[in-house]
Length: 404
Length: 232
Image (cartoon, rainbow over all chains, first blue to last red; front, side):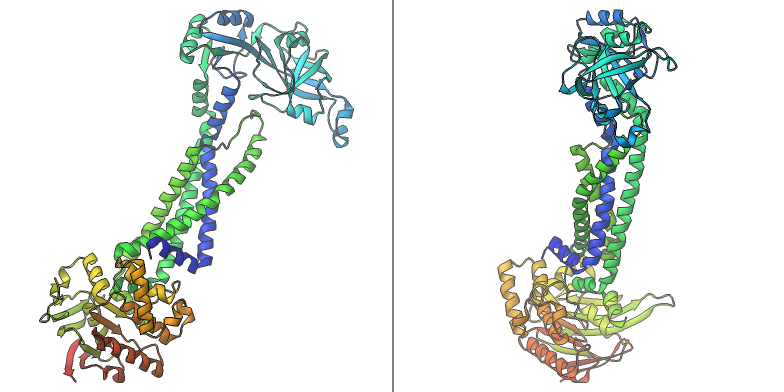
């Protein structure tokens, strides 16, 4: 009987201890898996979101991320300058504004009817440039004319905004305190805004926003979104040469900045929790195996007296550890997935998180790390009990077993 | 090295075994010389704590003398590595313990197969040998029973079958009837007689005068030393 089969029998012999070990490793393994998904999840998700917008470079006035710094002045001229560059395939100006929309009372639920104001706060994304725009049409069509807007799914669902509906829109064009008369816009599509912040989002052409502002806005953009014809870095250099006062950032540079700043916290939390969970797994397995070995020293000494080698009895202990961690690790994967989905929902409810962002994103290398770390844990956890078995004095143990 | 008729299976030459204790060294076996030839049947007697089990452990190569020389088939045991001693025990020595030490998660047959598996015996051969041994000890019908389903006498029979699994030249039994009632102990003693009659050298450590009297040679220890060595 080989060491693995022997270890399996030993585990089956003590079902309660084995179940405790496997469930403990499953719980710890699930947390470990989630921490591994979290450590790169935001970066992976952000990369995906940036790629889905269809643009390679973001140009801003100060190098800050859009909405984080000053706007680009004379946006129309900048748009033309960039569009003329051979390194640029297409370019789009984007401006954000807060605002409110009026929703007919019949579209609200009876519970909310009295509790909510007649206007709901929205975030407006206005774009200037040729379609496709930086959102994905889910139903209806994209904006093509003045006073046409698209809205996100949450707005359609929660506010009961249907395709073809007319909405009174009041944007805040220059300051939060201004109150402009509403402009009626028509909803032509339900879309997904990958990088949108806020619950309710309205997308429109820049001309629509300018019209709603009634001339109370200037020719500014939060950012220029650029798609390169070829090499992205070459295009970024060309943009910087064309307008040295502006700061182009490739998607990779945006990701790099986020990794160095905002995402660092999640990676640090992930690293700390990964270490803690592994330490728990290590202690759990070490204690279980040590107790098991101490209960069986007589048997082990007898096996050694019968000629089983030191390496063989040590291998038995290692195989027990690997089996407990192996089964626990397998069980931890569905648990980890379920837990990740729940945690992702909770974290995505935090304010300021783009709708398409995810905190826990599966990647094959997370699975490899999970397996590798658990295997390493199984080995390290088995070191002490293996040492006990390897150093077991056969004659003394046999004598003690008889006299005890 | 193979044994020749002139070479004893095991030869102890003035062996002493001392244990380091907090209160000073305790000498369990002192200056014992002994030779066991093929086919011998030896009983080691003496009061508790006289060094019987310690001597048995040295004869079985699970312990080495502090002084003196112990040779197994002409090889100095002290000069063998742990792995070499394990192989020696696996292939040439069988152990029967007072508390049986059968593995509770294995069936009787699997307990008997285990040393053969370790020795690299093929599956078909070891299954045949296991059937033969369980039949030899009268437990062919209990091959698939676990130790918890066996009586004390049956467990000791399985333990004897396990000790014989790799056809050892020397079988060592430490109080083999110590946990059994008189009748069952008698049956185990008869089985051990048969093992010796079939050619395996046998050394029994026992308190039991009746069991010791079955041996052809009785060594009596007192305070770790040989008090008497009588052939019968």
